[in-house]
Image (cartoon, rainbow, N blue to C red):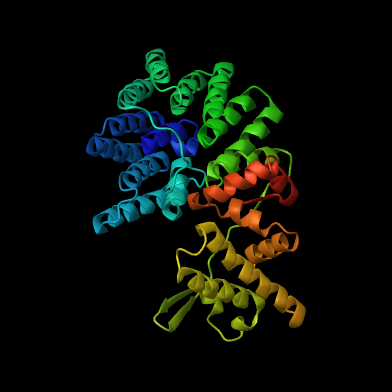
Length: 387
């Protein structure tokens, strides 16, 4: 149910024509999504492939197929599932080559590193069946009939916020921004961790020229799910309009270490292949991170996933500080320089939590948000950063 709702919710708000393609492609993609919602995956695959042939430069056929394949094997560790997962990733990468803002393709890449989902309410069996019927009607453009189905789901499962989001989406497609905003707001109130509800609320409020409301909803989307690129995109778009886009951390792993018995093997990126390159602060910091990761991995019961990951970054930044102080060697890589600045100003923990978020960090994120209700906004405004 989660992956199916995501297909529908993400695909409806593509911002660029390059994502959608021509009319034939858009029709075929919608038909494919409707078939997928009914469990007819082979038929859906045929529609997505036909859609890509109708508009070779459109990303949505590739990303829709990628998301369907990826979601069907979520959590499955079998070799055949891994093969399908990599096929989905290749399709997502193809979509991103065509349009790097494609929401479904970005969601596949996010899921590659973090298949976790926020703890949202699921519908009952009856509610799920009605929801699927509503989805099929939605994709046929039968919005009034779809609304009737979604309202019945709301009556049966009043805590299933996606039913309110989807009813709102029917109004959004019809450009009834006020009704759409009302329902997206209702969904966000029911489940504040529903990032899609907040993101769509930002879209609706922007159509209503409610700038402050748009900013608030976009920030709440990030607070609900910091790992979703589309949530940050909304904030970035608003800041770009004011001439102040967010800078991207764009963290790139440069050194890896693995342990087998008493032996530790270190693998480095090409930039650190020479002895000279290993004399700088960048290599020392990445090496410290990788070696600390080996130490943390020796006992998976030691602390939480966030505590173990943060320990690695803290160790790395301690080495950066030592090299600056004792050897007068400073970092040159942009991503490490950003992390060093966050550490110097006492925000490294928050930066790791928000800019490198995995669903395993949820307990720490929610505890921090409870103690700092305006923390996400303050962090973004202070450092002007995004993942």
